[in-house]
Length: 175
Image 1 (tube, rainbow, N blue to C red):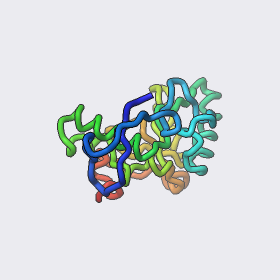
Image 2: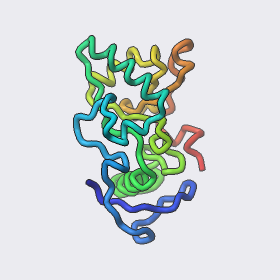
Image 3: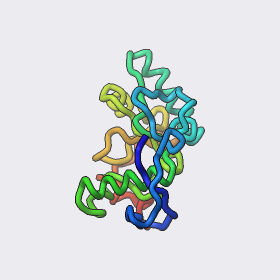
Image 4: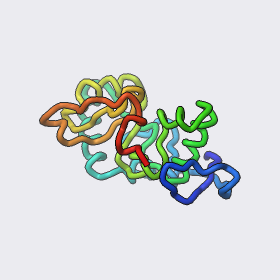
C-alpha cells in the first residue's frame, strides 16, 4: 500500500499535500504488486485497461511467450488519486513541476487514468515490443519512457508513429 491523497481534478494543477486529506492507495487504485502479467484480471490496474488495449496486449503477450518472453505490468490503469500521488512524488524527486512533467502526467491528462496506457516491465519484454509491438498496434510513445505503451491501431498498417521526446511534447498533455 502507498500513502496518497485524493484531490479534485483541476487541469494542469498539482494538488499540494496540505490541501487534501491523506488516505492509502491500494490495489483498488491501480497499485500493482511485482510479477503481475497482462492476464491478471484480479487487479484493477490490469482489468480496468481499455478493452482494445488489453486485447492487443494479450495477443502480443501470447506470441511473445513463444519466444520465451513474459509481459509483466509495472503499472496500468490508475485512479486519479494514485496519479496525483505519483506526480507529487515526481515533483519531490526532480525538484520542480516542470521537470516532473517530463515523467508523470496530471490526473486530467494521464493516459493511465483513462486506461489507455501500460508500463511494461523487464527489458526482454520492452525489447520484444520495440521490435514487434506495432504489428499489434502497441507503440512506445515517449523516447524517454521505453516501458510506456499505448494502442495505436493505425500502426498495424503504417508502422509506429514518431516518438515524442517526452510527455511535455505531447499535445494531449497540454492543459
